[in-house]
Length: 221
Image 1 (tube, helix red, strand yellow):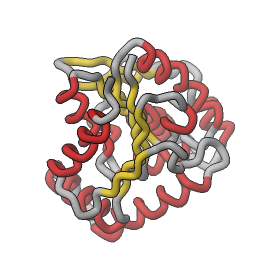
Image 2 (cartoon, helix red, strand yellow):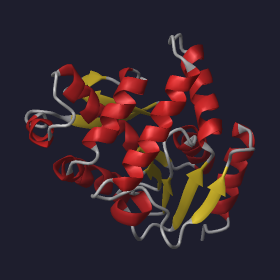
Image 3 (tube, one colour):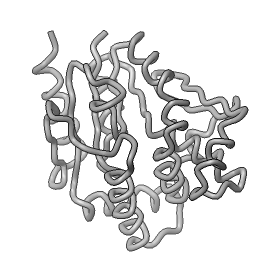
Protein backbone atom coordinates (compact mmCIF):
# COMPACT_ATOMS: atom_id res chain seq x y z
CA UNK A 1 0.00 0.00 0.00
CA UNK A 2 1.10 3.59 -0.67
CA UNK A 3 0.45 5.90 2.28
CA UNK A 4 0.70 9.68 2.50
CA UNK A 5 0.85 11.39 5.91
CA UNK A 6 -0.24 15.02 6.11
CA UNK A 7 0.20 16.83 9.41
CA UNK A 8 -0.44 20.44 10.31
CA UNK A 9 -2.28 22.85 12.59
CA UNK A 10 -6.02 23.37 12.82
CA UNK A 11 -7.58 25.20 9.87
CA UNK A 12 -4.67 24.67 7.49
CA UNK A 13 -6.99 23.08 4.93
CA UNK A 14 -5.70 19.56 5.42
CA UNK A 15 -9.12 17.94 5.09
CA UNK A 16 -10.27 19.87 2.01
CA UNK A 17 -6.94 19.47 0.22
CA UNK A 18 -6.31 15.84 1.17
CA UNK A 19 -9.83 14.81 0.20
CA UNK A 20 -9.57 16.29 -3.29
CA UNK A 21 -6.02 15.05 -3.92
CA UNK A 22 -7.08 11.56 -2.85
CA UNK A 23 -9.91 11.65 -5.39
CA UNK A 24 -7.52 12.73 -8.14
CA UNK A 25 -5.09 9.92 -7.31
CA UNK A 26 -7.69 7.22 -6.66
CA UNK A 27 -6.69 6.91 -2.99
CA UNK A 28 -9.00 6.90 0.02
CA UNK A 29 -8.90 9.88 2.34
CA UNK A 30 -8.72 9.26 6.10
CA UNK A 31 -9.56 12.30 8.25
CA UNK A 32 -8.21 11.35 11.67
CA UNK A 33 -9.23 14.70 13.11
CA UNK A 34 -12.83 13.64 12.58
CA UNK A 35 -12.22 10.67 14.84
CA UNK A 36 -11.00 12.87 17.70
CA UNK A 37 -13.85 15.28 17.06
CA UNK A 38 -16.25 12.37 17.44
CA UNK A 39 -14.74 11.43 20.80
CA UNK A 40 -14.99 15.10 21.76
CA UNK A 41 -18.64 15.26 20.67
CA UNK A 42 -19.41 12.20 22.76
CA UNK A 43 -17.76 13.81 25.79
CA UNK A 44 -19.66 17.09 25.32
CA UNK A 45 -22.95 15.26 24.82
CA UNK A 46 -22.37 13.47 28.12
CA UNK A 47 -21.45 16.62 30.05
CA UNK A 48 -17.87 15.53 30.63
CA UNK A 49 -15.46 18.01 32.23
CA UNK A 50 -12.81 18.33 29.51
CA UNK A 51 -10.16 19.10 32.13
CA UNK A 52 -10.85 15.80 33.90
CA UNK A 53 -8.72 13.07 32.32
CA UNK A 54 -10.45 10.28 34.23
CA UNK A 55 -13.87 11.50 33.09
CA UNK A 56 -12.71 11.61 29.47
CA UNK A 57 -11.36 8.06 29.79
CA UNK A 58 -14.65 6.88 31.30
CA UNK A 59 -16.57 8.43 28.39
CA UNK A 60 -14.89 5.90 26.08
CA UNK A 61 -16.82 3.05 27.71
CA UNK A 62 -19.41 1.83 25.24
CA UNK A 63 -18.32 4.31 22.57
CA UNK A 64 -18.06 2.98 19.03
CA UNK A 65 -16.42 5.15 16.37
CA UNK A 66 -16.57 3.97 12.78
CA UNK A 67 -15.52 5.32 9.38
CA UNK A 68 -17.52 4.43 6.28
CA UNK A 69 -16.80 5.45 2.70
CA UNK A 70 -20.04 6.32 0.91
CA UNK A 71 -19.74 7.39 -2.74
CA UNK A 72 -16.00 7.86 -2.10
CA UNK A 73 -16.74 10.27 0.77
CA UNK A 74 -15.70 9.62 4.35
CA UNK A 75 -18.54 9.62 6.86
CA UNK A 76 -17.99 9.23 10.60
CA UNK A 77 -20.39 7.33 12.83
CA UNK A 78 -20.78 7.47 16.60
CA UNK A 79 -22.59 4.45 18.00
CA UNK A 80 -24.25 3.91 14.63
CA UNK A 81 -25.28 7.53 14.02
CA UNK A 82 -23.72 9.67 11.27
CA UNK A 83 -22.19 12.69 13.05
CA UNK A 84 -20.04 13.95 10.16
CA UNK A 85 -21.70 17.38 10.21
CA UNK A 86 -22.20 17.75 13.98
CA UNK A 87 -18.46 17.53 14.69
CA UNK A 88 -17.52 20.66 12.72
CA UNK A 89 -18.37 23.41 15.25
CA UNK A 90 -15.81 25.54 17.16
CA UNK A 91 -16.99 23.98 20.44
CA UNK A 92 -16.25 20.47 19.20
CA UNK A 93 -12.91 21.63 17.75
CA UNK A 94 -11.79 22.63 21.25
CA UNK A 95 -13.21 19.41 22.71
CA UNK A 96 -11.23 17.42 20.13
CA UNK A 97 -8.04 19.18 21.17
CA UNK A 98 -8.76 18.40 24.83
CA UNK A 99 -9.49 14.70 24.36
CA UNK A 100 -6.58 14.20 21.95
CA UNK A 101 -4.13 14.95 24.78
CA UNK A 102 -5.37 11.91 26.71
CA UNK A 103 -3.21 8.82 26.03
CA UNK A 104 -6.11 6.37 26.34
CA UNK A 105 -8.04 8.26 23.66
CA UNK A 106 -5.10 8.01 21.29
CA UNK A 107 -4.78 4.29 22.04
CA UNK A 108 -8.53 3.89 21.50
CA UNK A 109 -8.26 5.26 17.93
CA UNK A 110 -4.76 4.08 16.99
CA UNK A 111 -5.66 0.60 15.72
CA UNK A 112 -8.51 1.94 13.59
CA UNK A 113 -6.18 4.40 11.87
CA UNK A 114 -3.46 1.80 11.29
CA UNK A 115 -5.83 -0.81 9.88
CA UNK A 116 -7.30 1.64 7.38
CA UNK A 117 -3.82 2.58 6.12
CA UNK A 118 -2.64 -1.01 5.91
CA UNK A 119 -5.52 -2.04 3.65
CA UNK A 120 -5.75 0.97 1.33
CA UNK A 121 -3.69 3.37 -0.75
CA UNK A 122 -4.46 6.36 1.41
CA UNK A 123 -3.90 9.96 2.37
CA UNK A 124 -4.24 10.37 6.12
CA UNK A 125 -4.18 13.74 7.85
CA UNK A 126 -3.95 14.80 11.46
CA UNK A 127 -1.46 16.12 14.00
CA UNK A 128 0.89 13.16 14.53
CA UNK A 129 0.46 10.98 11.44
CA UNK A 130 4.01 11.26 10.12
CA UNK A 131 5.57 11.17 13.58
CA UNK A 132 3.50 8.52 15.37
CA UNK A 133 0.71 6.81 13.44
CA UNK A 134 2.48 6.25 10.09
CA UNK A 135 6.18 6.87 10.75
CA UNK A 136 7.06 4.86 7.64
CA UNK A 137 4.65 6.63 5.29
CA UNK A 138 5.87 6.87 1.70
CA UNK A 139 5.32 10.64 1.67
CA UNK A 140 5.14 13.02 4.64
CA UNK A 141 3.89 16.58 4.31
CA UNK A 142 3.59 19.30 6.95
CA UNK A 143 0.79 21.54 5.68
CA UNK A 144 0.49 24.92 7.36
CA UNK A 145 -0.65 28.54 6.96
CA UNK A 146 -0.57 31.65 9.13
CA UNK A 147 -3.09 31.88 11.99
CA UNK A 148 -4.77 34.86 10.29
CA UNK A 149 -5.15 33.03 6.98
CA UNK A 150 -6.59 30.01 8.75
CA UNK A 151 -9.02 32.15 10.76
CA UNK A 152 -10.19 33.93 7.59
CA UNK A 153 -10.90 30.60 5.89
CA UNK A 154 -12.63 29.05 8.88
CA UNK A 155 -14.78 32.14 9.48
CA UNK A 156 -15.94 32.14 5.86
CA UNK A 157 -16.68 28.41 6.01
CA UNK A 158 -18.75 28.73 9.18
CA UNK A 159 -20.67 31.73 7.86
CA UNK A 160 -21.49 29.91 4.63
CA UNK A 161 -22.81 26.97 6.65
CA UNK A 162 -25.18 29.28 8.53
CA UNK A 163 -23.24 29.52 11.79
CA UNK A 164 -23.36 32.82 13.72
CA UNK A 165 -19.72 33.49 14.57
CA UNK A 166 -17.34 36.33 15.45
CA UNK A 167 -14.03 36.41 13.56
CA UNK A 168 -11.99 37.18 16.68
CA UNK A 169 -13.48 34.15 18.43
CA UNK A 170 -12.51 31.94 15.49
CA UNK A 171 -8.97 33.39 15.51
CA UNK A 172 -8.63 32.95 19.27
CA UNK A 173 -9.80 29.33 19.02
CA UNK A 174 -7.15 28.62 16.37
CA UNK A 175 -4.37 30.22 18.41
CA UNK A 176 -5.43 28.25 21.48
CA UNK A 177 -5.55 24.99 19.53
CA UNK A 178 -2.09 25.68 18.09
CA UNK A 179 -0.69 26.11 21.58
CA UNK A 180 -2.53 23.12 23.06
CA UNK A 181 -1.66 20.81 20.16
CA UNK A 182 2.03 21.73 20.10
CA UNK A 183 2.51 21.67 23.89
CA UNK A 184 0.70 18.47 24.87
CA UNK A 185 2.84 15.78 26.47
CA UNK A 186 1.62 12.97 24.21
CA UNK A 187 2.30 13.12 20.46
CA UNK A 188 2.52 16.92 20.15
CA UNK A 189 2.00 18.62 16.80
CA UNK A 190 5.36 18.97 15.06
CA UNK A 191 6.89 18.55 11.65
CA UNK A 192 8.50 15.17 11.07
CA UNK A 193 12.20 15.40 10.23
CA UNK A 194 11.61 13.95 6.76
CA UNK A 195 8.38 15.83 5.98
CA UNK A 196 8.05 18.37 3.16
CA UNK A 197 6.90 21.79 4.41
CA UNK A 198 3.97 23.25 2.47
CA UNK A 199 2.82 26.76 3.47
CA UNK A 200 -0.46 27.72 1.81
CA UNK A 201 -0.98 31.13 3.44
CA UNK A 202 -0.88 32.92 0.10
CA UNK A 203 -2.38 30.14 -2.01
CA UNK A 204 -5.93 29.53 -3.17
CA UNK A 205 -7.50 26.15 -2.50
CA UNK A 206 -6.89 25.12 -6.12
CA UNK A 207 -3.22 26.13 -5.92
CA UNK A 208 -2.83 24.27 -2.63
CA UNK A 209 -4.32 21.12 -4.14
CA UNK A 210 -1.92 21.35 -7.08
CA UNK A 211 1.04 21.79 -4.71
CA UNK A 212 0.21 18.74 -2.60
CA UNK A 213 -0.63 16.60 -5.62
CA UNK A 214 2.73 17.51 -7.19
CA UNK A 215 4.65 16.62 -4.01
CA UNK A 216 2.98 13.20 -3.88
CA UNK A 217 3.35 12.46 -7.60
CA UNK A 218 7.09 13.13 -7.44
CA UNK A 219 7.34 10.26 -4.94
CA UNK A 220 4.98 7.75 -6.56
CA UNK A 221 6.76 4.69 -7.87
